[in-house]
Image 1 (spheres, rainbow, N blue to C red):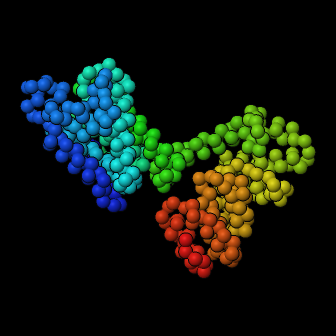
Image 2 (image 1 turned 180 degrees about the vertical axis):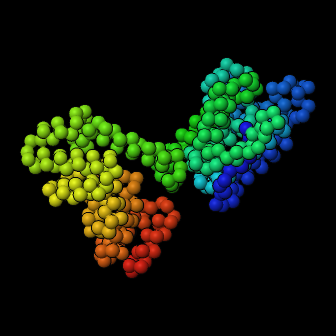
Image 3 (image 1 turned 135 degrees about the vertical axis):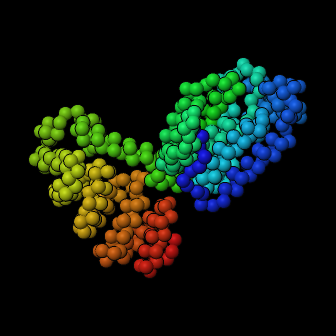
Length: 395
């Protein structure tokens, strides 16, 4: 099964990736010795002047974790690595930018080389090739575009054709698990360098998204993990009777928790919170919204979980109950202003005040805060246009 294409294209020319491919080819043409097999054996088909660039685990120099990645042991070796770098690197270059992509590639080469040294520290067999760096780039592609489709050429005896497989499955199961963990048959392939490259590529990419050094979106792996974790916590909260307003986890059911309340008001508030979570668990947002409004009327200082209040606010807005929706969104921001969705809530709140509640000053307050935090180009453009429509100055 050989990947031959993807269904996405970079938004800009991946010049940094082209430069890396060109540099690899240039170094290969300068350093490869087609007669080295006869003189030196199959382990080192490299011209004598370039042998200092190879990475020997038992006796390596500080520059070799970089230089080894630009040497290749044959035509198929260089063509295979450069094809995979072209296939997956163009879109990663687009996400990271040219300087960031170059640094990322070098980091992948270094850490994959050091990973090989770690597991083969007593080996005197030299290591060459860009496979570890390419693995890091492929790992980054998995993180940034897990739902993209990879066109795969397959054959079995006389049966052959193409099939489209999501990147997360093809890269994760076939390229990482099967090719490097299950099937380790060749003594001439640095499997551990590949695995170290995948690990650093995936880890660095997730770190860049989590820290927002590069913008995230709802299609990347980090957003999928965040959404999964939110659903997991909510399911656990509903199933186990978790009370988010206390510091301890209560395993008992809601009626027991209500009975332990110390006053009539607290009992009523606990009952309303139980109604909110019970309604949400049954996908009854109308019932959850009704219980939430009763809870706020009873005690305006009451707080419910982040996802619950967001679901209720969205429901109220969809029903045209704009005043109540705005109050719910403001309650969300009052308690969860550092959440990953805060800027979208600010944008929604600004639009409510601008378009439905005729409060331009309040709208501008939230829109100006949102435009500084939004990373999605479409949302940011919408926010700026709304600010201009209200007579505010552009950000």
